[in-house]
Image (tube, rainbow, N blue to C red):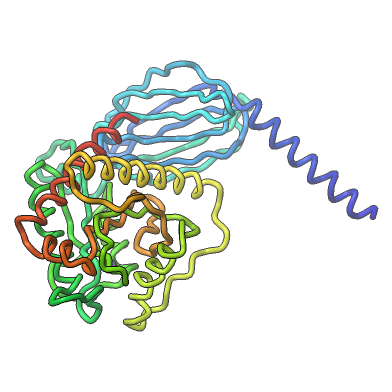
Length: 374
Ligand SMILES: [Zn+2]
């Protein structure tokens, strides 16, 4: 009993301590310095307390975002840096301050760490941001730093190779998804976006590899393209899925199970997610999840506007493995139903297929606009 009391007391002390930390943390100053390599900028935050933070990069209109447990900050800081244009500060009044650094080019976070208290009794949160590799190559060639602000999309034609996906009438899902992805790529490139495909021929690609392709191309958006199939022939129309931990209904759970089984078919073990995620990773995931959901809503509205048929509840959630990137907004679009004769005919014809692809490309344009506002 005595032991338990002691334990509870120390736990309480820990909570109080933590609370007082978040209550009191004040951003005293923000300083920057450019390193001699001209590619790295160091950002230093002088803080009264050492508190939790999360940091991430948004690549369209490049920005560095720091969410910091803190309550007070000056409204502006005068920063002079080769990589930073300006800083915006938003205090939500709930103990978290968001710092948004508008950047002059695409960067990655090279280092981030805390330094012990200095002589002024302040903690220092240090971040080194560095121009991304591709840019470094470009700049060494041209001898000046080019600013890259292209929005990058990875399109993922579902299935392929030994996995045909749904097969109905004389059509195979893997063929339609590949054609659709290639056509959509063409539409998006005309709009000035950079587009990658996870496969450009009839081959098997594991779900994990599909996610990695998106990551390695530093994608801003990942769209997996599929064609649905159910027993009931009359069901038709498009739908869009975003990731959830629990599938929203039984049918969705079954579908997720089927799509996830693809890796098992090919003898690749399903990825086992870590049981415990840190709070910071969770913050980032939430941001990605919100962005994915916002894309799904935009798509649904575009489809309705264009008079294209959709399911009654077109935005659904499921535990698709292919959507599990923690930092890339990801959606899975079912263009229609291969099990419905009209949809099957419609989607296997290039001209009629163009209608749903137009809605999808317009949704991307609108989505990019909303992402630039953060
Ligand atoms: Zn599929």
